[in-house]
Length: 169
Image 1 (cartoon, rainbow, N blue to C red):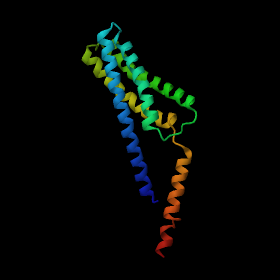
Image 2 (image 1 turned 135 degrees about the horizontal axis):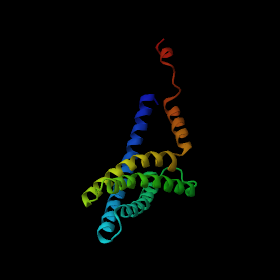
Image 3 (image 1 turned 30 degrees about the vertical axis):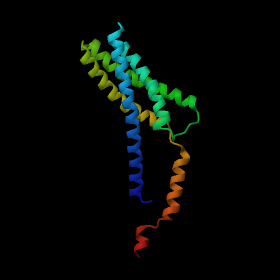
Image 4 (image 1 turned 60 degrees about the vertical axis):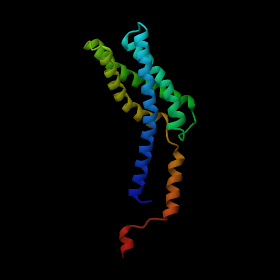
């Protein structure tokens, strides 16, 4: 397998992963906003607390989607460690997402329903970048043997590669 085709293969795999991550994340955003707005408008819970409740509910639904859809082919050993890391990085994402909403609400007094939803959306976007990186890097790790098998298969399919200078003589 040439370097160019190996790079293309890795980029295609990353693209598929991003699409799956986005599908699960998009469903999580819908859950997040639905719970946030229901709690906000049907109860007396303050804005940021309503957002935290919504984020926790969305995090639970997202874990199921990531584990059984986006990263179903990843290492399934050590589920306790996986779940612990997922919750740790999700908590950091929760702080990012709701920290921005907190600053907008209590720092700048931007707390109308529209403003709250806009800042929640921006917070989710920033937190999503962090979550994508952390989940794929630390939580849902690729199986180490998979890369070795792909390398071996490409070696067997393409045969040993000769240096270009040797093949031109």
